[in-house]
Amino acid sequence: MPMVEFSAVLNSDAQRAWSVVKKFGEIQQWHPAIVESSLEDGESDGAVGCLLAQCR
Image (cartoon, rainbow, N blue to C red):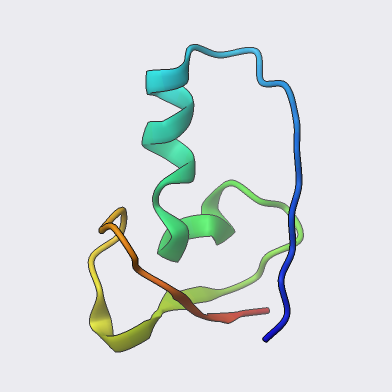
């Protein structure tokens, strides 16, 4: 399974930043290189342990 790691400093407080990046199934709304994404097994965005099923 491919794995990507990235580190960055954000000009935001932790609560605001996490409210955006925890929605893995909606990554295409804030990441310019992602066209579409979805979660495995219909999991809810932000659920602990949810896995990204598709990303292109």
